[in-house]
Length: 121
Image 1 (cartoon, helix red, strand yellow):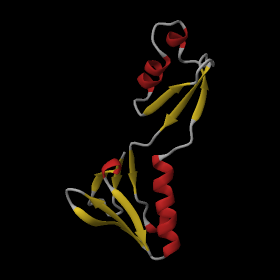
Image 2 (image 1 turned 60 degrees about the vertical axis):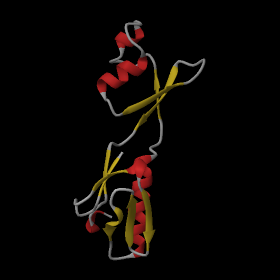
Image 3 (image 1 turned 135 degrees about the vertical axis):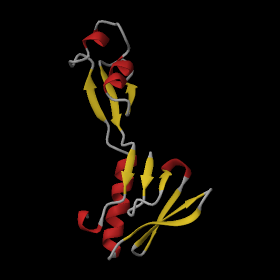
């Protein structure tokens, strides 16, 4: 996942960065840049909400899909796997089949997260 600073100045990889909150400032430590400010808010509560939104974007709730739901007739006919069918529709999906079940667990992860503006929290 990519994380964009509130100002738009920085666009960094989540997986290679360390994020933390100190009062009303959200920091990131990136190996190539060092310690940078990703967002600053007027209150500590707003910075806490912004960090919560970052966590929710990185670890979304799973969506469970029955294998026979259209428009996946090609997968139902065995022409391709369910993962291929879902990925053909949206390349940002993570698919995990549930063993011995007609259901697949699908994660619709965000690819980009931008820290919200003050009035968006």
